[in-house]
Length: 326
Ligand SMILES: [Zn+2]
Image 1 (cartoon, helix red, strand yellow):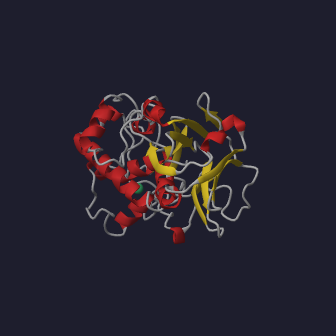
Image 2 (cartoon, protein in one colour; image 1 turned 180 degrees about the vertical axis):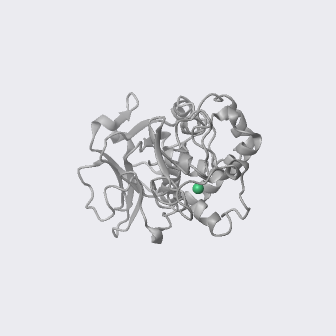
Image 3 (cartoon, rainbow, N blue to C red; image 1 turned 60 degrees about the vertical axis):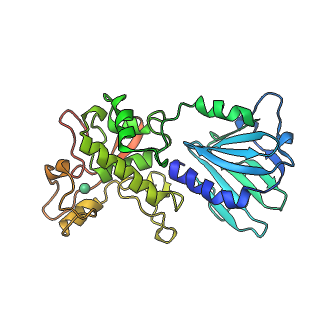
């Protein structure tokens, strides 16, 4: 993280505050993360107005007056903080620094000082984030160089599109295919786990073994998970654990970061029905064997797949026969 919902949630909240604002200056506090195109420097940003903020996968592109633009990638630990003149904060991305931290702090890598006295801070304790300044004419080529797949939030992301993206990766585990940015742009580890759980598909299933009904269910699950996650700016996960923060609306994860906890869907079914209203909702789920003691809901399992912590329910998401997981 930050993944698609965190980045898109930040973008949506920044647009009304930053678009139309005049930039007084850009302060670069970490030269390692700063990549101006040839002939440009941070001085070129001063006095320009933010015209638009667009997102491509997890990349944010700020279009500026005078045919300039900068691209910001928060990578795995970046955080964006808009601070108004009165000190009110809007925070997106990684949970650290904490909301009450004095900014700038040692993790602050860039600051956009705005003419109004407000500021936009980019913080990153891990130093993987980056900012690239370029002429506006270079943006489309720069974005294209990343070969992003279709955006799951775009209206033209249909079940047929997902079928064709998975067909090209049919030998790979479905979880690895979903994490591939050239397959699907920006979904990310947390939301791949949540989508597979909602679709009742084991993460190690080969993409090519999904039935047309599986793919339709997975497509619907991705849309459903993002519909919940994006408006609230994504979930909060700290040290591999989902954070219980009910008030913010960001406490919606059902499997990711919940290793050892009872599966909420199995608990729901044991209580008289699944959350999608069907008696079981899945032919794969219907054939699953219950595990654990009688009356005890199965617990979420954590495994490593494609180098990432992967969370799933061994009952809702039964393992394919050749799989060593679950
Ligand atoms: Zn379950």
